[in-house]
Amino acid sequence: MSGRRVSGMQAWVLQRITGIYLALYITYMIGFFIFTPPTSHDAWQLWVMQPHVSMAMLLFFGSILFHAWVGIRNILIDYIHPFGLRLTLLILVGLGLAACGVWSLEVVMSARIA
Amino acid sequence: MIKTKQRPIHLDLRRIRMPINAITSIGHRISGVLIFLLMPAGIFLLDLSLMSPEGFATVAAVFDSFLGKAILLLLMWAFVHHLLAGLRCISIDVDCGVEKPFFLKTARIVLLAAFPVALLLWTAL
Image (cartoon, rainbow over all chains, first blue to last red; front, side, top):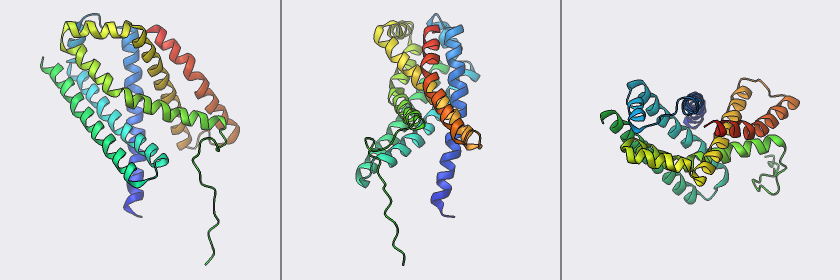
C-alpha cells in the first residue's frame, strides 16, 4: 500500500472524529445560548475561563481547523485542476487556517488569564 | 495492449444531472465553505466579547442588528444542513441507507429539514 492511500485514510478518519466532536460541541453551544445566554461581560468571561469550558473551546477550534482543512482540500482538488493554482490556493488556505489557530489560542488563553 | 475506453469525465455543473442527493451533497460543500469563510469573523467577535464590557456590548449590538441576524440565520442553516448531511454520510459509511429508495429519501429529508430546523433554532436564540 502506498503512503498516499494511508494519508487519505487518515484524512477520512480525522474528518469523522472531528465532525462528531463539532456536532456535539456546536449543538451544546446553541443550547447554551438559547437557554442560558450570558447577560453581562463578567458572566460570560467567568463562564469561559473555567478550565473545562476553555479546554472544550480549544478542542473545538482545533477540530474545526482540521475539519476545514480536509474539506476545503477535497473541494480544491475536485474543482481546481491547474497544478500551480491548486497549490497556491492550498498554501493560502493552510496558512489562513494556521493563523486562525494561533489567533483562537491567543483569544481563549488571554480569557483564562484575565 | 488494450486501449482504455475514454470515459466522460467532466465536473461541468451545467452538464451533470442533479438528482436530489447531488443537491444535498453540493449543499454540504456550500455550507462548509460558508462556515469556513465566516470563521475569522467568529474569532474576531469572540475576542471582542471577552476583551471588555464595551466589547461585549458591541458584539451584542452586532447580533441585534438586521445584518447580524441575517448572517446568523444563514450560518444556522449552514450548520444544520452540514450536520445532517454529515450524519447521513457517516450512516452510509457504516452501510446504513446505501440502497436506492432509502438513499434518496434521506437526501430529501436532509435538504428539506435543514430550513425549518435552522429557522426554529434561530427564532429561539
